Amino acid sequence: NDQRRVLMEYNITRLINDMGSCENIFATPIPLGYTKHTARFLYVWLLLLPAALEGSLGFGVVFAQQLLAFGLLGVEDIGIQIEEPFAVLPLKRICTKISLEAQVVRANAASLGTWASVGRALPAHHDEHDVAV
Image (cartoon, rainbow, N blue to C red):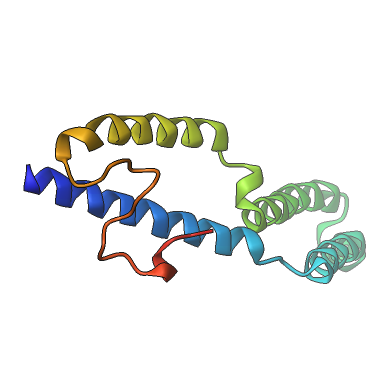
């Protein structure tokens, strides 16, 4: 019984710490100028690329530029998605899973006998900075 209580306390602490980490990631903005500058530089570079490669590739420059544009614009798009991870993550599914696990914890809290309710009290060893607001 004590092992289950300690394990539950550990899991709740981990969940709270992970929520705080997610809040930090969400609150840290990527400067808009960074995103705009990289995209503009890439477009200008791709626009001028045929002039640089035309002498050595001839009409093959069309295919080379298309291939390079596809690859580099794809990497740029992936970079934009990585800058805002919460826009592409399956948050609804993750939140549903956390909610179901929290309901299991609440249902089992009475059998552990340490907390009157998981939602109303935290274990005594938690500090104020452990709780994400």
